[in-house]
Length: 268
Figure 1 (cartoon, helix red, strand yellow):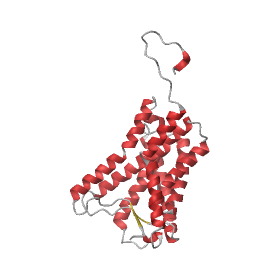
Figure 2: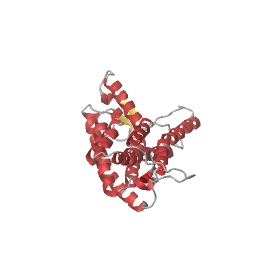
Figure 3: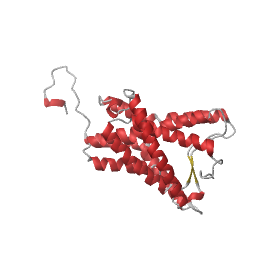
Figure 4: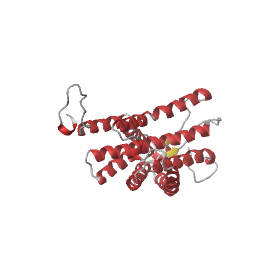
């Protein structure tokens, strides 16, 4: 098929039509299968294991950043950086796909055109969601609906906090670019309604946090609804990336500094 239905002159290169709905659907499914869709399935399996294990959920731990080579700090650092870098490959794939269609990262607001706007809105959003999310987690754990989340259990080495910051940034870029910017763009192109697309994005976000428990599922679904609504309003994932990164940085570094020193922060 060719654009405009016009004839193609002798020796001229045919201009291919845009991707079909089937191509867009298959592309989106493959991107999710390589990234957060696979994470959602893994989280479901993990939560099933936690439910069927003797003892309550709150007696079990969900460890987010742990040592990958105990007592071998340089090898551990290499594994940490390798994991962060490879986790971002699906983002590079998405940016490639957006560029191939002539849109690029600007189409989802993943650029540096408005750094002040992104950081300012992101900081306000992080302040609002971070505090309420912590309260929801503490309540869900107390009710026996959540595992004890251990944001980090890295050894006390010089690279601990820089790696935690990089991990937070990696999480935010991966999730917001794929589950908000890319996924909503593809669902819009496939003719999904705004409400259905919001639900799909929010449910997916909740599912790949299910390994934490019911609190992680519900809290992240609510966060997903808010993030999609703000993305529609602002037209940019930049503030969402900034907010998510700030939330995770505070959670990771705060746990590392406060665990075992304050009574209100659960540990295992």
